[in-house]
Amino acid sequence: MENQLRNAVRKRKQYLINELIKKGVYKKGNHHLFELTLTDLEKAYQSNLK
Image: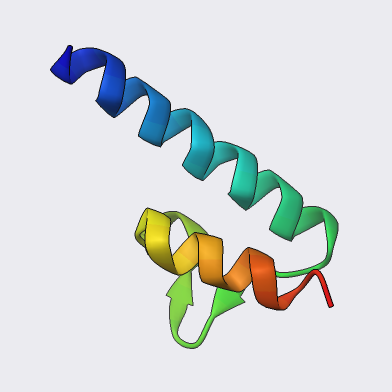
């Protein structure tokens, strides 16, 4: 079960990173996208939908 959750989080993070890169977002502040938490990636993604 734990492995499935970790895998789902990893896949969601990768999806969000790919979508942000398509929109030209590579960093948020001083952090690269891969350094961000899932929550931070979700927020960045939502703010770039507008």
